[in-house]
Amino acid sequence: MYAAVLRTPYALRTFGAALLGRLSYGTVALSLMLAVTAATGSYAVAGAVMALYGAASVLLSPLRALFIDRYGPRRALPPMALSYAALLAVLAAVAWRPGAPGWLLVALALPTGALTPPLGPAMRTVWGQLLSDRRLLQRAYSLDGVAEELLLVCGPVLVGVLVLWAPAAFGVALSAGLVAVGTLVFVASPAVAGVAPVPREAGRRRTARGKVARRLWRPVVVTLGVGIALGAADLLVLAFAEDRGRGGAAAWILAALSAGSAVGGLVNGAVDWRGAPRVRLAFLAVGLAAALGGAALAPGLVALAVAAACVGLFVAPALTTAYLIADDAVDAGFRTQAGAWVNTSLNAGCSAGTAGVGLLVGHVPLSLCFAAAAVAPLVAGIVAAKPLRSPGSATPPGLRPRGSAPDPAPQSPAGLEVAQSSSPSSSEPSSSDE
Image (cartoon, rainbow, N blue to C red; front, side, top):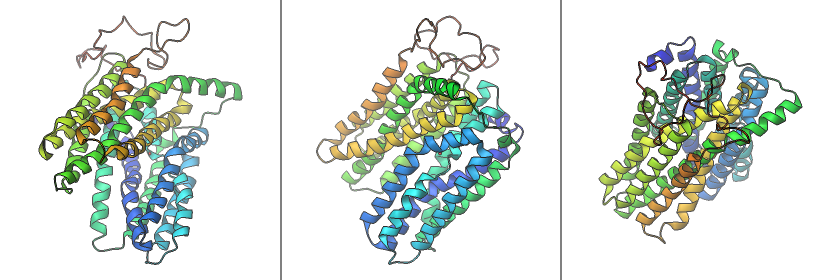
């Protein structure tokens, strides 16, 4: 089933190049934090560097995606990626030896984060260009999400191996090389050449932006809730493990969450769903909240690992569905921006979740902290389940494939019936990163 996606002309070549560049996102954070700490001897400086780098990378993601849509990936990505790689190389050089000036590292962090190339949203735009079949596009997004999840797990492991025999700054330099080579190979693909900039007149651009704001609220709200839950879970798992005197077990519990996400993503992509995507998105958000709430009852580390794996089962499917809804909510010239907004809400939610639960840990029992973390995806799921109707319209906007006929009769209340794969009517009725 996934083989059909990769057999699409130029798909494997383009996807492989994008993953090579995106591996740098899995290696750069840990490498940069270790390198700055070793070079300055200050956790405060390392924290400032990571905060500025992360904030610029996350908050400016939609703006960078706008340049991709406006000028096309072949024109916009190379200067962005090469400038980003050059700044990473400068950071690596400055932090290579102890005694580096902290002010210089802090000053370099902001422009470096600001230029992070949005390879994830750009690749999802290419998937939309390559695949007209909505079922195949769903599988492509699922495969993309699972692969990215694995990269974010493998990246820190790779850094952990590198620092055994080289300075941590070498990992920063490696991240620069990965993103530069991956981006250049990516934009050289004929599939990327097919993603042309779509110029618009000022009036039409204002109209399209209004549609984007109106139609993207659902996936943005849900991914924000999912991000809050995941950011909180990271800290809570560590606190839970340390409370039992086994802080190192946190890595294995979080690995179980990632494994569950990978399994959930692959299963989601293999199923031909029938029903409104907004209902499926709401179901996945509520399911994630229920699984995270169940973690509050975990009596020990093994039970928490099982609960974390159950949480993961909903993560990748929720993100895939959100990206699909966002993709269908906008015209072709806004796809990269739509994906970037979803990606930004997820990352912002992760930061907010970690910060928020950090205020609770130590003052509130961990079981209540887990329950509190489940509130955000629960509320987001309930809100996302509500239909959005425009004046004079019986059908929520942005929830049918481009160019399709109006939706058929209303779905069953569950809205999650699985279509028979052999049925011609089983095509994905869905609306839809770094």
